[in-house]
Image 1 (cartoon, helix red, strand yellow):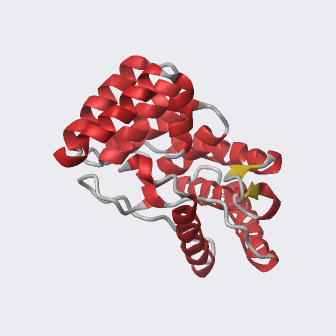
Image 2: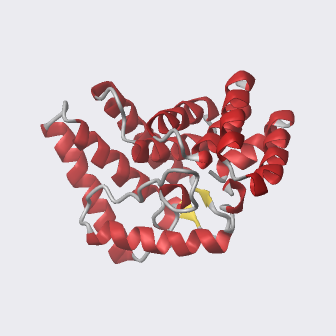
Amino acid sequence: MLFDLRSRGRRRTVQTVYLGLAILMGGGLVLFGVGAGGGGGGLLNAFTGNGSSSAQKQVVNQQETAALRQTQQEPNNPQAWANLLQARWTSAGQGSNYNPNTGTFTASGKQELTRATQAWQRYRQLVSSPDPNLAVLAARAYAALGDYGQSADAWEQMTVASPNESKAFECLAVTAYAAGQTRKGDLATAKALNLIPKAQQASAKQSLKQAKTSQSSAQQLAQGC
């Protein structure tokens, strides 16, 4: 279920794997594909914040520099902006940008997330159907910045691309409630409950109801998406 993903231990395990893949791919768009049918795998289980070494941070910085250069040379190339978004998202989880003990971004990390969302906005101007993996990164960046309205919009892009992914609808619901968008949250909740296996519906329904009735609870849950 969506709300089991906030476990700090589970986050760190996936964080380590995620960073390793990013480095091995040398700056490529290293994203975990989202499976259909509300499965437990995929990008929806990937988190940032790595407590990385200086060598790893240097590699990530080089990736971001290369991605930025590509956007300057090819400003109308959506893949260039996609690469920059991913590089900045990864950079936001490095070193002093992220506190692994509290699971939160520092001020410098939030600045990097802001730059990541700027790359997302430019990317969105260049494509009619955004990559759902990039939408997830943007949604999480906006949520970490406290911009739940934009986060909900990004999750909505994810649901359009992956209409059978229950976790995407759960995240859309809680971020919409966090932004005070009750109607959007209700529609997403209905869709999520329709996709979730019956044995898990009761707990999901309870969590989503809590998110609807308490905006602070919704914001907390949105941070765990």
